[in-house]
Every structure is written in C-alpha cells, then in structure tokens.
Amino acid sequence: MRTIVHIDMDAFFASVEQLDRPELRGKPVVVGGDPFKGRNVVSSASYEARAYGIHAAMPTRHAYRLCPRATFLKGRFARYEQFSRRIFEIMLKFSPAVEPASIDEAFVDLTGTEKLFGDPIETAKKIKEEIKVNVNLPVSVGVAPNKLLAKIASEEMKPDGFFVIKENEIRSFLDPKPLSIIPGIGPKLSEQLAGLGFVLIRDVLKYSLKEFVKTLGGSGREIYQLVQGIDDRPVKPPEERKQISQERTFDSDISDFGLLKWKLLLLCDRIAERLLKRQIVGRTITLKVKFSDMKSITRSETIDFPTRSNKLIYDIAEKLLINVQRRNIRLLGISISNLVPSVDWSSQLFSVDSKSEDLVKLMLDIREKHGYDRIVRAFEITKKRR
Ligand SMILES: [Mg+2]
Image: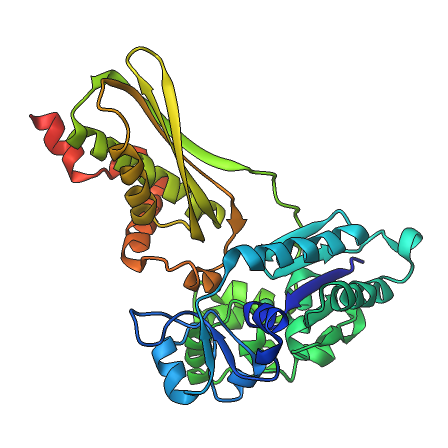
C-alpha cells in the first residue's frame, strides 16, 4: 500500500504578504491587483478576507464591494517563488518523489521511507511542522493511499489542517460526502449530477457501473472511478526543464521587417502551445538572431509574472527584435526560461490573455488530432498563393 501526502499552502500569496508585513496580519488581504483598474481577479485572499465571501478568481472589483477596507496588493511573484523553493526543499528532505502541482501545492510519495523516518503518518506531520517552524507559513496536509484521496484529505481541515484517510476508512469517509468534494467534479458538473438525483457519493454507488454509465453517458465511467476513490497515478517528480525553445533557419536570408515579424509570431505560437501542453509558464523571453555572416546575438527580457500567452511573448520578442540591427537575417529563435508549473487557478495571477489562450488551445487541439499543417496563420496561405 502506498502513502501519498498532499501539501497545500493556505492562502499562499496572502500569507506571504502577511508574513512580510506584520501590520497586515489578522486583517483582510487580497492579492490580485487594483480593483479600480482593468479586469483584475483575486488570485489569493487571506482567511480574514474570505470571511467576507471573497475567493480566488473573483473580480477584484467585486471583492472591493464585499470588503472595501481590505488591503489590495498586486502580488510579487519572485518573492512567492523564493518561499516556494524553501518549502519544496523541506519536502525533498523526506522523499525524492515530490511532484509540484503548482507553486504552493505538491504531492509527496512516502512509500518506502519507513526504514529511514519511521511511520509515514508521523513523517507527514514532521513535514508540516518543519514548514511551520522554518518558513513560518500555514499549510494543510492530507495523507492517503493515493493522490486523489490525499488531495481531498488536505481540503478537509483547511486552514492549518492535518487529515488522514486510511485504506479501510475510504468508504466510510467518502460515502456521505457531496460529489463536489471530488477534484474534477466542478460546480457545473455537480449541478448537472444533482439534477439527475446524484448529490452524495453514495447516491452514485447505489448503482452498478453499467447502470450509472447508462444514465450518464460516456463521462460516467470516469466519475464512477473517482467516487470509488480509485487513483493509480504515480507521484512523478518533474523532468528538469530549464527552457523551451523554438528556432527557424530560413531558406533564404530575410531583411524585410514585416516578414520577420510574421516568422516571429509563428515561433511564439509554437512556444505557447508547448507551454500550454506541459502546463508551465515562464518569465524570461530570449530572442536569438543569426545574421547572414553567421554571427549571432541574443537579447532577453524578464517580466514580473510568468506567462504562457503567445501574445505577450510575441510583444516582448517583437520589442527585442526592433532593437536588433537591420541586416540580412538567417535564423530567428525564441526561448522562454525561468519556468514554473502552472495550474488553471494560478493563471489568474499571470494576467493570461484569455482570447489568445483560447486561440492557442484551439490550434494545439487541431494539430494534435489532425497534424501540424492542418491549421496555419492566414498570412502563410496568402504568401504561398502570391
Ligand atoms: Mg493552496
């Protein structure tokens, strides 16, 4: 049997701000930007702010209406990263199998660590204690036989929680719970399920898999597996990836700036697709230019918040290209580094341009299903026709 731990920092960004600024402790703090400018959304709210009904993903404008006296902060990603690194270092002391799920969340596989550290549940407690003592931030910890249940367990007693689901307690724990506690069953799906009479987990398990799939259709199988608490996914340490790059050597050298911009856009599209596919975001964008005489240069810019937006990456790359000497160019390359994992909620902080992200998603989908050439930028077609 495995012992999997889910570590989830409580109101991470807001907690870091409260730690750095003692005058904010015990007070409502909202990280997510100016409520009066643009369309900012809450990326983290302190528990004091949550008491007013403020939660992540809510427009900060709305959060302001709920609690005008809250302190609204823009967020300091580099600072959060520092804390994140320290927290991950603590986990890695207890097991090499640490899988970051986001900047403030990870799975740790403690299976087989008994000889070194003793009872894995005690080890999980130690991890929580070390984070509290050494980093001074609140964290919730869930322990269970798999990732799905460990994640549910860490939610159970938030904040500052510690909760264990043992193998022989899975049914008694899950059966009376609402379906919405299952990660992957979002508000929309739970509503749909409730409409069919499925509110609690035991409502589903009254039926056989066959009967349930008949009622619900294709997605029934997956839901049925989830509500049983079955999850065989291993805890996978991330592959060490320092950067993602994409470059293109031209058939003949190009000096036309307009054409170079289009080529650049294609490279940025590909970078954005690969970031999206791997669920990562990056902060440093580097342009590489090789001239016709084979001399090459690179130019970089680091932004405050990590991104995977093709538009933002392109805007920066274009700016870098504008400042490059106008000569015949043989090769263009773009790379992005300073990479961190992203999950959907955290993209709120990254000021993702949802329009450009939708486009990248669509292109990636089509290309994965039907091949790379099935979708191209319009100018590539007009160019060929010319
Ligand atoms: Mg968290």
